Image 1: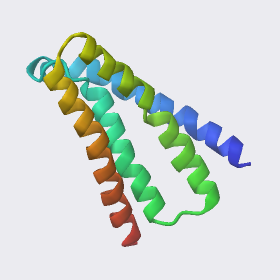
Image 2 (image 1 turned 45 degrees about the vertical axis):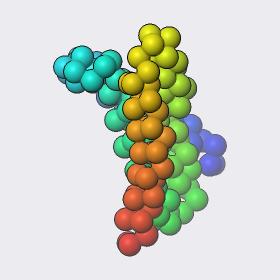
Image 3 (image 1 turned 180 degrees about the vertical axis):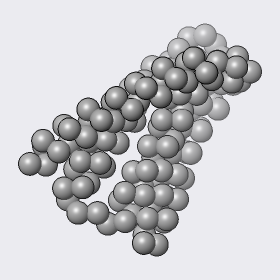
Length: 124
């Protein structure tokens, strides 16, 4: 049952990621140009996903809800592989400033947001 829930959740999460990525590529281009070609859609997706995962874990949800939303939706929504592909592209373009900023914001920001989400979720 948990496998089925995680699969259903992953379809939802991947669809959300696809929609946000396409929207971001069309409407957030001015940020990309202004900030050394940083991939804002992926950054937004991964940071918001980190916060939401911490929140879900913090509220102490049951196993079925966590399988559906925590493992499924958040697993399909966030994207570690795209993050690393974009980091590699920044490195190949010799855009070291953007590479460092994107890497620190993604990894450190993600850890901080997981903790903040967990803290807020544990209040309820």
